[in-house]
Amino acid sequence: MHFAKQNAHHPKKKKRETMAFSEKFHLSDGSEILIEQLTGREDVRDLLNHINALVKEKTWLLVDKPLTLPYEKKWFKEQVKKNRGGKCIYLKALANGKLAATATAERGKDNDNGNVEVGIAILAEWRGMGLGRKLLSTAIMLAKKRWKPRNIYLTAFEKNTGAIGLYKSLGFRQIAVLPNWTRHYGKYESRILMLLKK
Ligand SMILES: CC(C)(COP(=O)(O)OP(=O)(O)OC[C@H]1O[C@@H](n2cnc3c(N)ncnc32)[C@H](O)[C@@H]1OP(=O)(O)O)[C@@H](O)C(=O)NCCC(=O)NCCS
Image 1: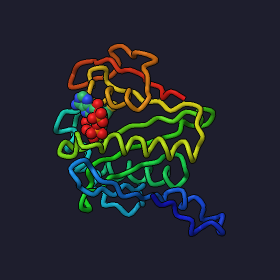
Image 2: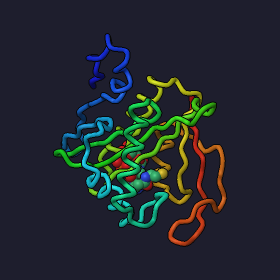
Image 3: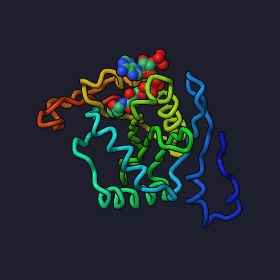
Image 4: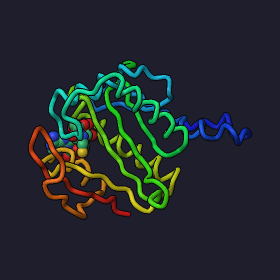
């Protein structure tokens, strides 16, 4: 695990310092994974391909139509700004230099900034080997260290039982049901709100 300290004597550069995190990790099949926070130097097309692969697979995400390059470019600009400003931690997991998974931890706005929402998405070929557990626990660890939040929470489609199994095993418990809440391929589906036990 590596936290950059090179800017320790330059307070004005502190915002960029918070983005520097990297750690190597091995999956259960032995593959080496590099986890690092968004740098701002990524090729937006790689991030677009990642999300669109999940959309194509019809996973339980909040989007069910492929995203476009202009949309992703705008999103990327905002994401880099939020990461540099310490409002969000966007982690990417690279296998042989290619994006295999992403996770986010994002603070609420203004008086809601004691609450951090987390999320995760692993490409199909990299599932079931411990990456989801590792990446999400890394996002949680960094959020706790940097922000000392009151609450760490997430929402999941009630039918996404695989993801919910992972969240429970990491210490999240269901605190509410959001009934028929989000459209998913034309049908309104319930979501659950889960809070990480202190
Ligand atoms: C859900 C998801 C993040 C799990 O990632 P993963 O890398 O496959 O998970 P891991 O290999 O780290 O497994 C961790 C635990 O999750 C549970 N789990 C993962 N997938 C599961 C499945 N399909 N069914 C049942 N349990 C599952 C297992 O209990 C596993 O426990 P173990 O460590 O004791 O074996 C991944 O399948 C994914 O990204 N899915 C598509 C996008 C998505 O649904 N994101 C979540 C939106 S709320």
